[in-house]
Image (cartoon, rainbow, N blue to C red; front, side, top):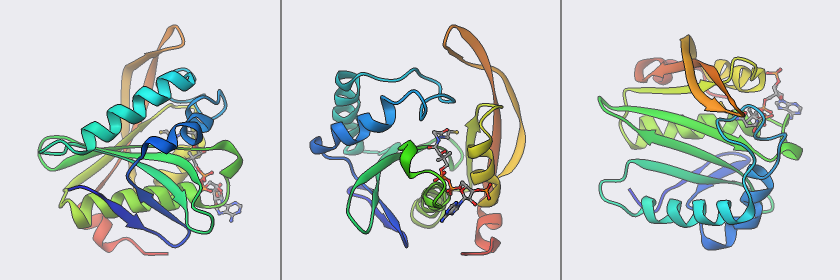
Length: 183
Ligand SMILES: CC(C)(COP(=O)(O)OP(=O)(O)OC[C@H]1O[C@@H](n2cnc3c(N)ncnc32)[C@H](O)[C@@H]1OP(=O)(O)O)[C@@H](O)C(=O)NCCC(=O)NCCS
């Protein structure tokens, strides 16, 4: 499915364009926003390559990755990245990151709700899961709030900042999403 746009009350998910590099670099180049992620802060050149690769992969058939820009509805500004990667057996894995000056306003929760809507409503998935650092309580709160149940720990899941790190996984199934209360 291309192009994709998922409209929310305060934000929307949309496809990346070549003009998004600087705005995304304000997220992925920031040590605060990437503290719990599986990679270290990225240079502008690395983000430029990531945007180019993302735009190319978005147009592949079949499409297996939905890496989308998170943009505010009121001013159109790109404030983050939301990703849904398709796996086998109608599953999908999510990832998300917002610019740190935008945290605490409900945008993270809305971002994950929109990813679930994309996965379940538009792509017909059965199961959507996410993996977070054990120390990432912001991510934990967001995933729990949208109904993603904590399932367990993947030991030594990622090698980052010179050490192995475990991940805690959360997931939600299609019938749980259908019956989850809507905001
Ligand atoms: C995780 C992340 C996306 C959360 O984003 P966020 O926008 O801060 O999330 P929300 O605002 O929806 O929710 C966070 C808190 O803000 C609160 N909040 C919601 N609306 C609010 C508002 N209008 N004003 C103030 N606080 C608000 C929420 O209640 C929640 O707090 P609580 O659960 O303790 O009650 C963000 O911290 C981030 O990008 N982190 C770096 C990348 C990352 O770790 N990604 C996850 C990888 S697994």
